[in-house]
Amino acid sequence: MTTRRVTAGERQSAGEPKAPAAAFQPHIVVFACNWCSYAGADTAGVSRIQHDPHFRMIRVMCSGRIQPGFVLRAFEKGADGVLVSGCHFGDCHYVFGNHRAVEQFEKTKNVVRLLGLEEGRLRLEWISAAEGARFAAVINEFTDQVRSLGPSPFAGPRRAA
Ligand code: FES
Image (cartoon, rainbow, N blue to C red; front, side, top):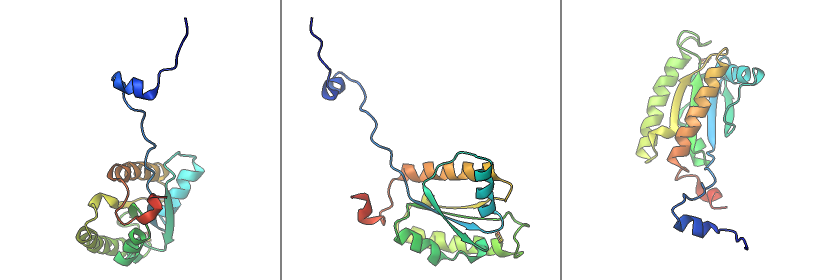
């Protein structure tokens, strides 16, 4: 008796599920304040906490520095999601910088909405220097969320390549 390989097409017509397509890997930009969130990322690394690697981090001195233009520029340059992070309330090294970050973030959200982007592509989180595990959890959760939204409509032709 001879054996024959069953083709993928024959398996599908027999009711077997398709093999999963390669998962979309989003490009995420993380704005992190120097004193807390950036240090939190460092803590995650030093503690060898595994997390999703599909992000680029931009360090700023305080989350209050992150203006809508920074976020919009990231989307313009092809980011699929943008995470803004800073110190918890009461921990900002510039006292009220993170309160200003909230104001800036609300303005940014309005513009993002006007542009027709999903709000899920944008997030604000407070992460302290000691919260390496929290940093990893936020990155993983946000990456999954952006992955479920798919590529940004502003991502341009790099996706087609
Ligand atoms: Fe971290 Fe201001 S220094 S939010």
